[in-house]
Every structure is written in structure tokens, then in C-alpha cells.
Length: 357
Image (tube, rainbow, N blue to C red; front, top):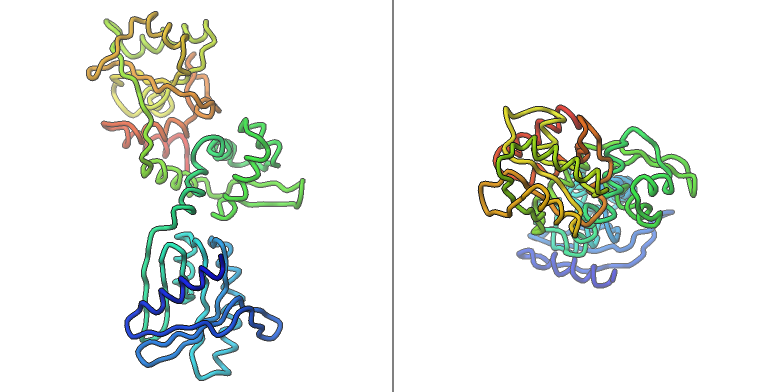
């Protein structure tokens, strides 16, 4: 894998007009330090030596540590050589935050997706390409399914320290899933950590950044939540809400009110809400509910909307207010962003007034 990555890197360098590139050595030692590779790059009649660190993936925290080592070596080498030395990171994937850091510190980089940055005098080159599909799949997976329940738990309890097992219980997922999710999150610098081994604990320190990333991934995803639209005759939204709460409590049916319905209770924004929106577990009990309230499925003119939800994560951290179960403010915020009308304005108001980050 490393050899393939280096080969791609050399090909990218040689694709630069009037440029030549070659690897001079692998695993070369410089005093008490070791480089993964050293290469020569010539462009426009000028030659540069590249001190290369190879990595699978690079995030801001990794980049900072690598930078310190490479810059120290490059600075020392520049004093001894006539050729300019450029520190360089070559990786399968480099996060946007890490790229920004490396650019600001004049450290070159190349990733498998084809992004290339060469901070050479007279040959300043920057090509930004989307991350590789495998990297996107790994990162995107944080915000779906069981892993998203870990994120949800941390956002709701953002001021608390958690060990893996306690957090797993709170998020209702396995310790293995929790551990994998936390490891991936640390690379984004969203967490603080203390202790080591089994006693290691983490706390969320960048809830806003994490929620921003979740929002971005959700809105960019081709997967959209599907909602059923109904019309309940001779019923106002608050009346539908009351009837639903009574039925679900009697039958033990998992449900939460969300979107505009819940947001208007958490942080009133609109004069009136035209539609009741809830999440329900699909099945015979949900069908019985529709029949009980005389809900008729429609394409337009709905006053009742249902997001049928099979995963338990959407019901986590629900709150009972005014006798009704509401989805957590975080879940309501995410649902609003996928709704129409003034929902996005309502989402921002909810985030400012209720969520707070």
C-alpha cells in the first residue's frame, strides 16, 4: 500500500509542467530521526528535496505532531544543503482541517484522492480534490445508525466525562461500537481525554463543530427520511397531538413529536403550526393509530405527518413536556433541517435558544 501511494505521488509530481521527480531513498535516517522517504523534485530549472512522512490518514492533531518533527529536520537540512528542503506528508486521506493547517505551515501534502500542495518558491502548486470514497464512507458512518447514537449521547451530556462502558449504556449500543466511534471522533479533535487503558475517559469539548459536521453530512447525503402525510378531518394540530399522546400511552407505542411541533414547545417561533409531526415505530399498532384518529393518507393539504422510524436512536433522550413526549432538541433540530417552509429558520432559532451551541 505504501509503495502504491508513493508511486501515485511521484506520478502527480511529474504531471506538473516541466517537472521531474524521483525517490532517492526509503526509511532514511537523519541523526536520531527517520524519514519514511526522501525524494527529489525539479521544476522550472530548480531542484527541491522532499522529506516525506507516510500515513494512512491525517487529522489536525496528527498533522501538528508530524509538522514539528518534519520542520525540525527540514530546517537543519536547509542549513547544510544548497537545495531547498520541503517537509511533505503523503497519506491515503487528509482531513480538510489538516490540509488547512499544513498549508498555513508551508508543509507539502498529497493524498490518494489526488490533492496536492507544493509550497516551493517559484513553483507554488495547490490542487484540491474530494476525499477518497473509502475515507468518506468511514467518516460518514459516524453520523448514521448505532454510531450516531454515541454522538447523540455526547451532545446531550456534553459537560460529562464518560468511560466506554458508561457511554455505551447511555447510548444503548455495544462497548465495541462506542470505542470505535470515540477513536474516530478523537481524530477530529472534538473530544478531550484523561486517563489510560480501561480507565480512560472522554468529554465532548467541541459540540458545535460536531453538530455542524453532522448537519453537513446529513444534508449532503442522498438518503432522505421518508414521511407519510395524512389529513385528520375536523382536527387542529394540537387536538391531533393530544389524541396521539393518549393512544400511544395506552398502547405502549414508541413515539416522539418532532420538527415544528416539538420546536414550537421548546422555543416558540411561529404564531401557529399547521401540521403535527411525530416519529412512530411502524407496524400494526401504528396502523391502528391511523384508524383510531381517522387519518387519511394524502399528497397535499396534510395536517398530520409521520416519520416512520425503525431505529431506536431517534427516540433516545426524549423529554416529556406539557404531557407530550418530544424528541431531544438535537433530533428536532436535525429533523427541521430536512423539512420545508420556514423550518430552517426555526432550526436556527431552536439551536440558538434551546441547544446553545
